[in-house]
Image 1 (cartoon, rainbow, N blue to C red):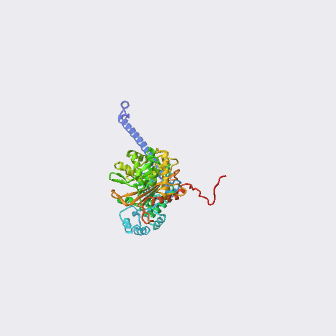
Image 2 (cartoon, helix red, strand yellow):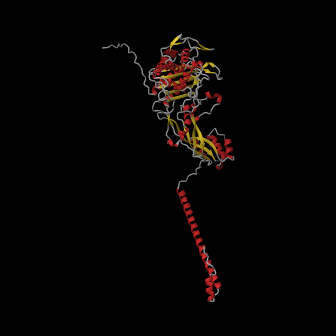
Image 3 (tube, rainbow, N blue to C red):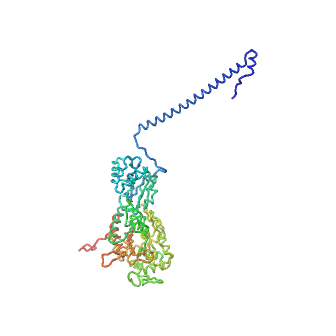
Length: 594
């Protein structure tokens, strides 16, 4: 900035020439400078006041507008905001193959208390103990009068209980919206459903998460908002599942069994139509996990998937099928069944004496251990292992249950020639009923491996070929003759040509060394209709005893087979299978040709 001098030389000289005082010029310049400074200061102050006034005006406009909006809105209680990520409350439904509800959601409420807001804690504790008998009045009173500012009282309450609590009139008792998982069919398919619990919880919402079964396996899918709450469709058929469980429960009681399992599977698509395990539980009130020592006796234990058993003679058809596929034998090939068959210090015997020779077909029909073991010797350990690996007996199944992931068949520690012989008739290798069902599906569908699934499929699986179609056809005929002529005679169902194989295996001791003398695992693996199989049904009973005769009978032919036959008779019409009944001979009518 250029400053004007207070005593400019030119004006001083002119003033002296005119006889004027130079000091007057300086005073005049000082006065003008002060006036200029005052004017600039005033302009600056006026600008600041204008800006401040504009700010105050804007603030008053915003506050006035907000007050007007609040005055015009409906009164509402302030909502507490949850900490962290938003809780996902909505969970998709689960339905069966026909769209019928297996699991859905029910709106309910949680009850919580804020003691600082309570007016009469004593009355509140007394009334709550009356409404909820499982609550302790003294403990509630201690919580209400202590230092706690918040506490949950009930995570789920009914509408009637909510109204009763509301009638107490205590402002410190509050309700939070909840979404409860509901299984309207109760225990039905409980081991498939699994169950849920509350995960992250807030005052206004709680996340429902799966703890077992398909609920846990598909947890992210069921909670994913991108799915638009579309229901998860399973392969189960609700009516078939109900019929299977009812007959299985009756058979388990009739045969005095400790437990039971059943798997019904489509041989082409791999769909599991029903899967039952007894004893079972209600997923609406899922029990606690049992001690590790009694896990196998818990109703939470899924015997069809987690139970790994020696399944006995049901394995014999695999040995016969491999022998036929390798060209080692045909159904009419004579097999040496003279016994006992000795290997070192061990002996292999048959249930009864079948003579010195049987055809391969008769070895399966009569269920000869010796004949099957001799066929296995011809196959050899390496080829036998490859075949069972192709059938899926070396790995866990990929069924969509969290329980299935870690269940791997128990294989011989050293696959010797003796192991080859014992595995051929179902001893020395332990597998689940689900593994067995998948293996029989491969035998029944023409020789292609199928993978069990709980999801509905619209087309058959095109799995790798394990055996030829000719071998599959021969094996199916053998299984049919087991029912019509062999050990599964009680398995014949009029109108539905049932084929299958029995298996009775001694139950191992709890120590793992040796076997019980009077406890068995009885299994019947069946296919129907045998001429064009659509389904495989595996029924397993744990420690069955049939007591209608003079002596107790434990073999599968007397225990598991009748139960499976009754199941097939009930479910075949539900599956849409029409009975194929041959007409009987009409009395006193002779057919003659023209």
